[in-house]
Amino acid sequence: MQRQQFHYDLPDQLIANHPAKERRDSKLLSLDGATGELQDQSFAQLLDWVEPGDLMVFNDTRVIPARLFARKETGGSVEILVERVLSETRVLAHTRASRSPKPGSCLHLEDGSQLKVVGREGALFILDFAESVVPVLNRVGHMPLPPYIDRADTEEDQERYQTVYGRREGAVAAPTAGLHFDQAMLAELKAMGVEQGFVTLHVGAGTFQPVKADNIEDHTMHTEVVEVGACVCEQIAATRARGGRVIAVGTTSVRSLESAARAHGGTIAPFQGETDIFIYPGYQFNVVDCLVTNFHLPESTLLMLVSAFAGYDNAMGAYRHAVQKQYRFFSYGDAMFIQRNPAPNGP
Image (cartoon, rainbow, N blue to C red; front, top):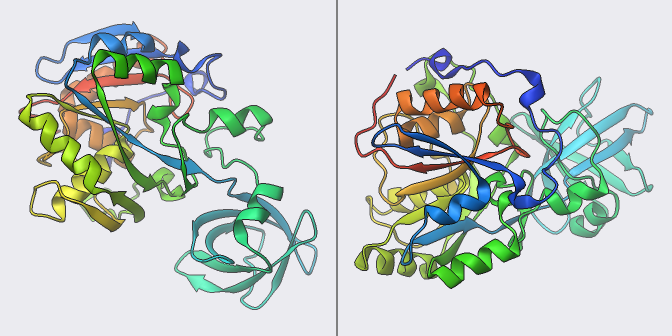
C-alpha cells in the first residue's frame, strides 16, 4: 500500500487552533462500517449510540508540560520537547536549535536552572536535570501543543489539552478523542449502564511523525509506554459474556488493547511495556468493536488505523464528507463514532 493513497485535501481554515467553548460542543460524524452510512450529529448524541452493557475504554494518561525553552552556554536558543521521563532527573528529548547541542554541554532554562547534555539516542537527546524533572516542568514547562497549532500555549490549554479523567502523568500529546468528554457526560454514561475501563498509553511526540516511506509497510513505527491492567481485561471478558461491545475512546486505547492481545496470541490479557504496533488495512482486530476518534492528519499512521477499522473506502469517504461539511480537524477538532467494518476493504 502506498502512502499517497491516504492523502486528502484539507483547507487550513478547518484546522482547529482552539478548543470548542465547552467540551461537548463539538460535532460528531457517525460512520457505520458495515454499510458506509454517515450521520452528522453533535457530540452529545454519542449517548444515542451506546447501550447498557457496553464497555468504554479510556486512556488515563495525563499530559506533562513538556516544552522548555533554554539557552546554550554560547547564548544560542534551544527549544526542548521532552519525549519520555527516564528517571527522577533524566529525560529523553527532541531539541530544536540552529546547531544541535554537544554532549557534555550545559543548557540554561528560563528560570536559571540547568540541564546537562549527556548524549544521544538516535535523533533524540539524553538530558540530565540538576534537580527532579517534574518540579522543573511544572515551574517553567509549557503545554506541548501539536505542531499544526501555530500559536503559543495559554492558560486555557493547561485545562483543555487534558482529559477530565487523566491521572497518570507521562504523555507529551493528549489522547484527543477524550477531550470531548466532561464529568457530566461520564456520569450520564454510567447512569445508562455503560461501564468505564481504563488503560494507560503515554502518547509520545512520535504520534505526529509523518510516514515518509512510499510503501507504508517500510515505515518504522515509534514506541510508546503502555499498561493494560488485569481490571480492564476482566471488564472486557464480562462485557463479551453479556453480549456488550468494547468501545475504544481514541486510537491510543485501540493500540493499547490490541498490543495486549498481540502479546498473548490474540487474546486480551494484562500487558505492560513498550508498543510499536502499526495498524493499517489488512489488520484483524481482536478486541475493539467501536471507536470514538478525532480526525487525523493526511498520510498519518492514525488515518491508516481508522481505514483498517472502518474499511478504506468508508474512511476516506467520511473524510471527504467532513471536509465538505466543514468539520473541525485534529486535536481540538470534532469527532467520529465508528462501528467496525466486519469485512474491511483495503486501497
